[in-house]
Length: 375
Image 1 (cartoon, helix red, strand yellow):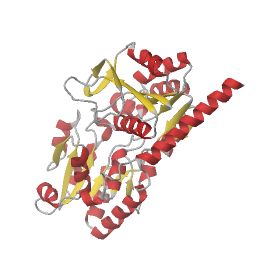
Image 2 (spheres, rainbow, N blue to C red):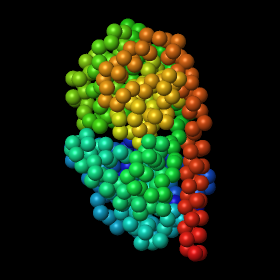
Image 3 (cartoon, rainbow, N blue to C red):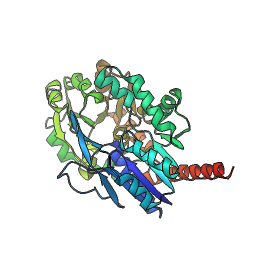
Image 4 (cartoon, helix red, strand yellow):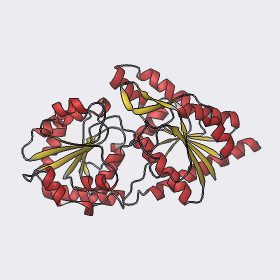
């Protein structure tokens, strides 16, 4: 099968869309298929394409004003030319918003089936950054995804949101996790001593440091005795968070084996953002054998079994976050039990298993298109 993956982000970018697009390309190659990636050009000097297993065509881009870590594709003939040259059986649109919309239009003109992967809660971002505009964001989402042969939602909450807002032909497709890279035996006692020299319980957050993530909800956790907060990631909110989280250790952006070592060395992982369509860092923490505290909203509802692999708390409730951390920090036996259950719960969610599900979706879309043409 020949596939063009049109993605709004791709390595060396570090985010959920980029990581999922890379894993998709790798799996297609592993299964003997022929993918091609079309993505915005990264910032100058940011390095190679992060181990891409296939050709990557870069479209000129500019940084998003106020958030330079995000690149927005500019109009270019490269996308349509790539589709014509590659002759795909299906076009895979990863988080379509700007480049993906152009990819959808080009696929429609060429009569190529398109599968759109919903990955970003644009409505939630509109509330965060503009205080309004949620209805307009949903109109945009609906118009983009209605043109696809199938929209893939990563969680039950995301699927419900899409269907409630009138998006047709929605199916479920979760995300995989690298259970070889992220595993409990990566725990590093030397790293733990460096991060918490007085034997504190280490509570970690991993992800973008941006307003929609609400990392400031960890402020109360910083005040708990015997607890050290460790923050991994970068973004426009880093300066404000350094003030809001006294005593926290900011490690900046970490990837690969180093990130896996940090995850496994935590006593507890806390995610604070309420707008996650999936939340890959929660799944990576669970694969590392670490119990999770997360908001009872979006993707974490599918991932965290409350009272078995972690605790779910009301979104945006700093006191609830603090109390959940206090309870688990004081109960090592409970942490161990939750961590073991968390690891067991994700062991079957490999990228290979999830990638095969994606290929099944492609096959179903192609079969439906053939049936429609024959009729």
